Structures are given as structure tokens and as C-alpha cells.
Image (cartoon, rainbow, N blue to C red):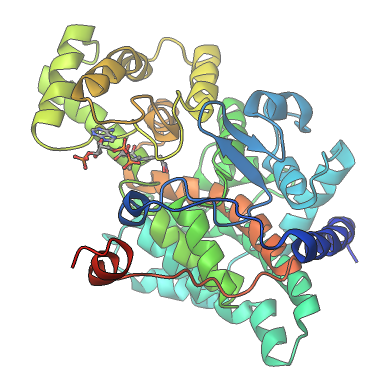
Length: 435
Ligand code: HAX
């Protein structure tokens, strides 16, 4: 058994026993009450699922297994780069233990060993018109690989419930190994005239991904290491994570569950906001006729967007009530590497202008920037200007968190997810007793 799987088995087996004992003694303990406004309001804040890999505090932001982003930047192995390796974050999320350099080197190699793209996946992608949105291609590509699912094969052969975690782990590892290849294939097919680039197995997972996209600048490698680390997980209730969790609970294969989650990530209120932000910023530049607007000009454009009934992309959050630490981490990166970039300056000026405008509306619960407000400007600087591809980058990263969490769901023996719904008629008649 490989070292990561062995460690995961040991911690998960112990956790399974603890959770069973806890449920036996405290299973009837109430952890929340649900208000009618929450049932009609997107289930905000209802504590109703278990997600081991990360937790989101509204005031503080994300912690991955207890570590903030600055702590991860300090404590995770960096390989020969300056930013943490996503390999290390996956190890941490799956086991709860910080990995050392040897652990991440092993994982890099293991993902190289499992990488590549099945022939049928290339065929499916080649058959699609180049005008198809990259997120649709990404989802299709993942689905097209589902015949390789170890989980599905072993389930069909009569696998016991106590072995689900093992088969899930196998699929999670292979999927994560393949996703940069899939994403790079889509990028090069749609935007680079089908000219593909061979992987470089001397590179870490994030740098090799950058390389296959066509970017070999060491600073871009560092950007990708950081980007793929900070987008990986945001606790369990966000739409992409929750979708993977829900679909996985039917014992659909990790491939099909992940593809479903990617379809959720593709929405403009979720991961596609990174594409919307940069398009909106270039609309701003076009409308104002300058890439060095002052704050008053920016305020005019922000107000125009609000007046036209649209949201300001990259601002607001369903849980956070402060500037997103993932935004701050990208701002720090930009200050270090590309502080003179005019589009980055627009992002920073927006940060000074937008919160006050949103606060003045009196209804926006979080006027601060989220993760998507910054990423596009940095990618544009390095020459990755195909905005429609941005959510795929997010998706490659998000797979790390949702697949680690999915392995935990199977290890803890979680059942089919099935909340109760009500009709408005029932609400009026049985709960409010007003009809
Ligand atoms: N601009 C304008 N209005 C906004 C707003 C924004 N950025 N954010 C919220 N509002 C509005 C809402 O549309 C809502 O208006 P109505 O009552 O008229 O419908 C009101 O303020 C209350 O919303 P909320 O409770 O503050 O926010 P929600 O929890 O309902 O929604 C969203 C959270 C992220 C969807 C929302 O803030 C939004 O639409 N933001 C812009 C899109 C975006 O950046 N999405 C990415 C979020 C992070 C993420 O998932 N990344 O992948």
C-alpha cells in the first residue's frame, strides 16, 4: 500500500470509530434550528453536513485543517519554488498531517505515474466545436474518463462498504493526476490551434500544468502553485463542493461526481465569476477610455453596473463577512511580482471604491472582494488572456479539496444525502397555520 493511502487508512479508521461512538452517545444533540427565511433563502448558514478538509469562518476566512493561508505558505513544502506545493495541501487535507519534502516529492511522482489522457477523451473533445465553453469541455472530459473508475468497477463486482474509501482514493489520485493534462488539452485545442505540449515529469504538479499550457516563466510556476493551493477547498456548503458531496453520496463514481461539481462551478455566481470579473474590468477600461482611471471614474462605472441591475462580479459572499484571505494572498503576490501592472492597479482601486458603493445599497451582506476579484488581472499580466479558460483553472484546484473530502465521506460511511423539502402550501397550512 502506498504511504499516503496507508496514512489515510490509519487516521480514517480511527476517526470512523470515534464518530460512531460519538453518534451513539450524542446522536440526538441538536446542532441547529432552521428558519423559514433560510429554507427559502438558499439554506444560508444551516449547519447540516460534515466536511473534514477545511472550515470557513465568516470573520476570519478559510482554514485548511486548521491552517490559514499565510500559515500554509509558511509550513507546506515549497519544492524548489517560493510558494507552497498543492501536493502538500492535498496530503494535509486527506490526512490532517503536515507533509515533509519527501512526502510531496513522492506525491508529485505518483501523480506523474498516473497521469495522461485516455484516447476516448481526446476523441470526445476533438469532436466538439471549438466554440464550446471550456468548462463544458472540462466536464465532458471528466465524464468521458468515467469508464476507468476503480470505484465503479469494484462496486459492480460486489465491493463491501468498508472498502469504499480505498476505491475512492484510487480514483481521486488518478483524477488529480489527469486533470492538468485534460485542462491543458482543452486550452491548447481551443486557443492554440490544437498544438499540444508534452509534459515535463521533472516538474511539480502545478509547474508541469503551467508548462503544458505553454507558460515556462518561473514566476508563473509560483503563481500556479499559489493559485492551485488557495482555490482548492472552501468547506462543504459551496455549490461545487456540495454537489460533489451529494452526487458522491449516491455512490455514483468520483468521476461523475466531480463532473457534476464542475457544472456547478461553471455558474457566474460561483467559479465563473473569475471570467466575469476580468471581462467587466476590460469593459470598464473601454468605457472610460483609459487603463489608468482615477477613483471617481471607477465609481461612475461601478454605479452604472449597479443601475443596470447587475451584480459587481468578484464582490460579496454567502458566508464571508470580510475581504477574502484568498484575495489578499493574490494581492500580496501581485505586490511582490507585478506591482506596476495597470490592470492590477485597477483591481486595487476597485477594492477602495466598490465596498462603499455596495454598503450604500443597504442590502449587500458582504461588500468585500472574494477570491475571483483578483485572479484574472494576474493571469492577464503573464499572458494567459483567454478569460473563458479561467474557471477551468479554478476547477483543477477545486478537485483537490472535493476529492479529499469525498474520500472522507466514504471512509466515514456517510449515507445517501436526502434532506426534506416542503411545499409552500404545507408551510402555510402545517407550520404557520394561516390557511
Ligand atoms: N453586487 C451587487 N449586488 C450584490 C452583490 C454584488 N457583488 N452581492 C450581493 N448583492 C445583492 C444580492 O444580489 C441581493 O440582492 P437582492 O436581494 O435584490 O436579490 C442582496 O445583495 C443580498 O445578497 P447577499 O445576501 O449579500 O448575498 P448572497 O449570499 O445572496 O449571494 C453572492 C452571494 C456571491 C452570490 C453575491 O454576493 C454575488 O452575486 N456576488 C457577485 C458574483 C461573485 O462574485 N460570485 C463569486 C462568489 C465567490 C465564489 O463562489 N467564487 O467561486
